[in-house]
Length: 478
Image 1 (cartoon, rainbow, N blue to C red):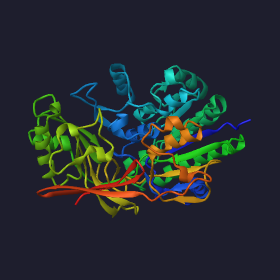
Image 2 (cartoon, rainbow, N blue to C red):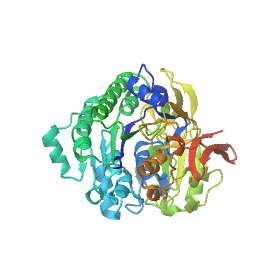
Image 3 (cartoon, helix red, strand yellow):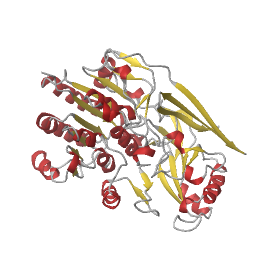
Image 4 (tube, helix red, strand yellow):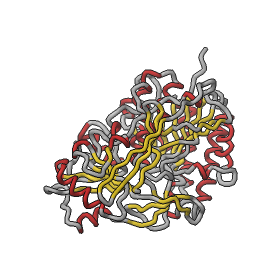
């Protein structure tokens, strides 16, 4: 009789690989040492949470899955309004357009084969929503302090586990509550093929206190202790030998060097709002800004580009085919951001590899927050490196893999482990065969540097490729 294979994903929001040490996170450090460390792991760009959550569960880049940012303009929903990717608004998008994402999620694909995906998250409602927006029909569930999908599950869990604790810094009380739901209900009673636990730490604390600063060590230690509780449960319930465990973060981090209110500066430069001819909308995403022009007008996009490159805070700049690639821009397609719901332009702030007060490298401007706080969203190499680990019966032991890997590779690899290779083949991510027990050695990646310039402005972008799967390494103004 075949052994039932299960998969568990644990995400520590904003966790940097350098924070996985025996001093800060002894349990996660032990897990990393015993399994596979993906030493060249990448998020997708923009390096923000809800975009990467969507790529994690679809195995696709943002241009294809359709969520462009934590805030974005969705033209098939409302062509003149920037919206937050949060649960109430995302449900409105679904009610209007029929879909939150443009491709199937893990939950959708598993549901076709009678399997379930359960996600429990303590981060934003938008992050949680994207894991299984079709739970009512696909099966499985999304569980969050503010809502569940399917909706009736919320009252059932509240009656059994009580109300969710209030948010805090660190946000440990909510993580404990989520872990209890995982180990007392989801794993033992629903026994899904794939389960996910998403910790809002250390992201929540680092946004407030700075990267590695203030209460961050406490947040790391407490999140690490909850990880130990989950791993202990697998051992105590004889699941360790049949469960493959993935650990990830959704992005790296930078320290804010300057706050740039891009939309305010555009209005001061007399660019109208997007509902007017020649108008522009700005979707702020921390280390980057998504820009939309009225009617996708190439002339407006050209004028906007000319103004942007004259600003000292303007970094790498990318344009959609629909606005004709103004001089000095690189194509959005290089980032994997070209698609039906993509912006017309994306600007990432320039960055530097300076250490902050805790010794973590990476400084960049941001669209909000305060100088010294933590932020992400840009093309900084320090944000485009994130945590990727794996362990369990299917994986090699005590192995470090240097070939490029990314968040988009987890979904196809999980489908492969569950015997659903045909479903994985449609994804842009790849199966991480080099990490599997008795798997082949990783091939040599191809690396490409792209350059674009105009008078007074020059930018470069580096991309690594493994076959048809592409990973953005960094981009900066030169």
